[in-house]
Image (spheres, rainbow, N blue to C red):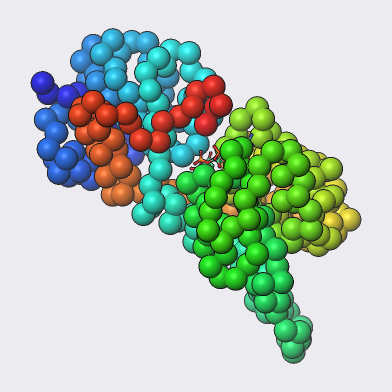
Amino acid sequence: MTLHILFSAKAERWSDYETPLRAELDAAGLDYVLDCDMPSDVVDYIIYAPNAEMSDFGKFPRLKAVLNLWAGVEDVVHNETLKVPLARMVDQDGLTQGMVEWVTGHVLRHHLGMDAHIVNPSNTWDCTPPAIASNRPVTVLGLGALGLACAQTLASLGFPVTGWSRSLKDAEGVTCLAGEAGLTKALTAAQIVVLLLPKTPSTENILNAERLALLAPGAFVINPGRGPLIDDNALLAALETGQVAHATLDVFRVEPLPKDHAFWAHPNVTVTPHIASFTRPETAARVIAANIARGEAGEALLHLVDRSAGY
Ligand code: NAP
């Protein structure tokens, strides 16, 4: 039977996704109708971006699954009209690769003190040798699709990397910790912290004043996860005392970050506009087509969201 696949995202995304999705659905050998508009009573799968206008999944009687275009699911996971499996985006070649590059770049910027030479208005000839990675402990909070790839890449560059997650992991080259005591240990004396946790009730404000105080004095905080992971006022206070030397923030409680927010003006905060990584249509289409093919073969979808855990 012909499958009906609804693309439900911002209208302007349809032109980016239509061709790659058709190519990958064809390659998967599926018999399908794909469109951004179709009668709700025929829809089998929804390819979904949480900023789409549609949020009532109850009107699709044949719906088998929702395939989220984003890794983050906080805006859809608690939708009570959604009664079918929800898969999130895990895409090694696009989303993950982009995040690895962004995180590595910002870690190396702070590790090497690159700013001192890029912004050097008085042309100072300062030969202070840069640090070496083996002396720079890095902690990655969240060892999922993105955090683990970042942690292992940083470890491959020689950083002593500690990773923290809900369930204990076993990852080559990374010291893995879990639980409350594990978090304290992971943060204690860390010189660089990268946050790649999802936004859930149990991760909100996880980097608070008490935990910022555990870091090595003059630490760097890099947050490409979600804004609410950090207590903003505690971070500003830690920047004031120098406990945190610099924060590179890609995500915020309110986006776009309001023009009058203290982060914009702060000399030791770098704001990037939620660009750490993107879902790329060509590679994401492959992931989605493969997942729909699994569903049609009677197999469980990959990258299913645990609705009770919230990610
Ligand atoms: P993921 O695969 O679901 O991994 C999440 C990780 O966080 C897992 O290791 C998980 O532990 C851990 N975790 C969740 N709740 C926890 C808790 N309460 N305590 C300790 N650890 C906890 O997610 P992902 O694909 O790596 O993505 C991570 C986040 O990155 C997304 O949710 C999104 O917010 C953000 N993101 C940002 C951008 C950007 O451009 N800035 C782009 C994509 C994604 P377990 O392994 O034990 O489950």
